[in-house]
Length: 418
Image 1 (cartoon, helix red, strand yellow):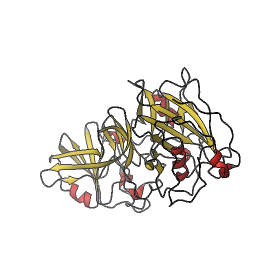
Image 2 (cartoon, rainbow, N blue to C red; image 1 turned 60 degrees about the vertical axis):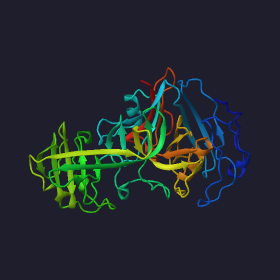
Image 3 (cartoon, rainbow, N blue to C red; image 1 turned 45 degrees about the vertical axis):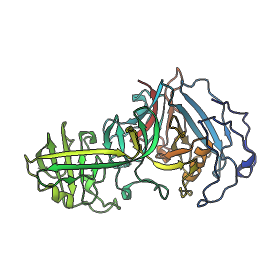
Image 4 (tube, helix red, strand yellow; image 1 turned 180 degrees about the vertical axis):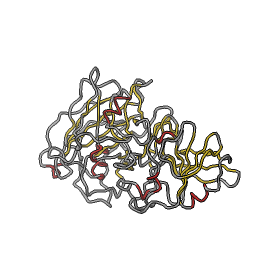
């Protein structure tokens, strides 16, 4: 990897960006993408790099990884960030999804990373904070579908930029290469009469008129909240017409009110509301009912792991129309063009030492770090980065804005290859 040139502070803030520190090509990713001018739909900014300085190399990096700090004054105040570059061509490391054993359980990133014996990691997807704890988007682990994405109107996350797909994911394929893709949920319940469409998997919102399937992976939390609200309003009343059907070995074993206990091992629960409830009420105990579902990636090869994300950078430029008003701590994942180099990125915020970044500023930072494609993950108090130096202990390396650390649903980690 190319070295990093001498570091000097940037004088003059944003006005002096054109004379900022030059970072050697390949310092963080290969091949690096040039920094494009900002999209015309976003506020104009002076030309030049966003980055002020990148601190020198560490001597305690685990092979296959490189940890660096960076700073900038381009976000109306000083910003400090952290980058862990991962060489996925190095057979000693791999990327893994961090998650708690059940969908409705959360934990701080250090706890999730410690369980996985991670070398480094960051928080992952947005989630139903203060509610079920379930993620907003897709979770796919070991090739097994865990959750589907909730309806866009019920996602407590900033909307993706115009033209982006709400079902965007960060995915890892069977070869270990990473890519940004789109994943759709599809499913049906085969019955003796007409098939019943499925509209979700282990999701904290059953769409109005829909039927969602819940597996034991949901955990012990009641499913009654999943039929509350509408597709656009979390505070709308709960549906007065909801039903749950338990299925085991392709046969209905019970029907009744939406369950408050864990789904039994070997069974699934079908939860319907409104028109979906009407379809399920036609089923009787002993009737044939064979549910099938899948998460379909639009790209290839198939993904073995994935989690939901917001589109941030494509083709070497930030997406046009990214949110550019609220500065906050941010988490992102950048990728080289071939998906063989990945960067975990955390930006500190909501503090005098680091004011944070807007999504648009985050996109420019990622491009300046040399990554032509990227996604944003949950930010704010969820932004946490951990690292385990060679021969050392796992520790938080950023400055999270929440203390104690916020429990999160999932994350992305570098782990020893198995």
